[in-house]
Image (cartoon, rainbow, N blue to C red):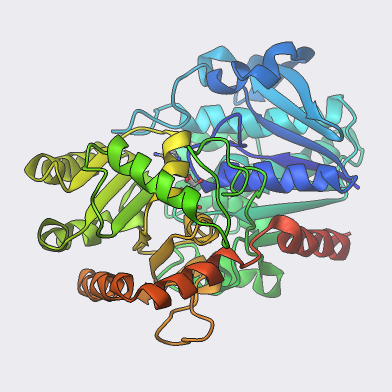
Length: 480
Ligand code: ADP
């Protein structure tokens, strides 16, 4: 099959969150199974400076109609392995920036222009390079207009560019909502700037366009597929999602076990397996040192790795600060994002630097060290489309403490609800419930045999992409 993925992030060339891991692992596994896979992403500075991209070639010059203007760009390509090509949509003015979406305080003002340009350029790349995909698979709002642009381009040129289009929603909270005036940049017929099209309460909503016009819409866990059809979790698009009825499929993400595997992980100071955990103790000591804590500390370490945004439940963690200040434990947080959240964690760290540690950066190596070196992984998300870290933590023998939402429900089994199969501690998404869960964790940590049993179960769960890839393969075949 010829498959083209279009996304704003793909690991290891640009990553701010799970989207990158998923597009990276899915495309790579599909290439390994013999499909001809292309991934189209923006030509970010970071992507172009990756060693794999060192020998990229210019394949195409672009002239993209954007409202009344034409804007130029170019397409560069490299192939990191057999059956896989990475196409970079380059225009320095838009993508030669350190961060992909904004400064940490606010989004870039030209995001609508940048990503309409990106989506149109992706379609032009498919047309001009005659890629002839069976499936065009777009991800999230940045690529959500691809299905519409593709069909309009087909009409305009009288040809078929792709057999089927798929849109995957990795997080419905991010919709690409812009002032109505940006509709002109799309050059789509005016009737699409209506309730039946991209219009959303007087604004333009790019994700809405994708949900309405993709042949098939998927999201990243069965539970989230149900949740986004409710007002509580649909972020105003629940009605639009419901209008697609049975076309909404929830496929759980997998873990790229080439990257996330304690047996082979080169980013760790030592490696380990479920039957020989000595290496995990080495990682734990390294983590304590890295955080500036005494390496002899013998209570539990609670680890957190996440984007610092409201979704990830840092408010719930901060509301439990007395737990982290009083109990015999340590808290290690790796997270970057909103400065106001960072500032509040920083205050807690300044108050108790011998107990709380924050690294406010994007740090791939440290994210692995926290997964490996912690005893519990804390993930009190208010909503969570799939979540990857709770799967990584189980594979690394670090027991997850998660809220009962979205993909966390599909990937963690609460030990109190099912003592024979339990792999983690679950709680309702509120501060008081997290407080109870943290206390349960302390108790479990003291019951060494039970702790080890739960740990081993998690480590031996198969979270690999094998299952997920089969799901996508079936979906593609059904669509075709
Ligand atoms: P989301 O996609 O909402 O950010 P996921 O749990 O699905 O959440 O995926 C998060 C991914 O981003 C994981 O691979 C995690 O390790 C990584 N990540 C998040 N914050 C950081 C950070 N500060 N440094 C390194 N990796 C991070």
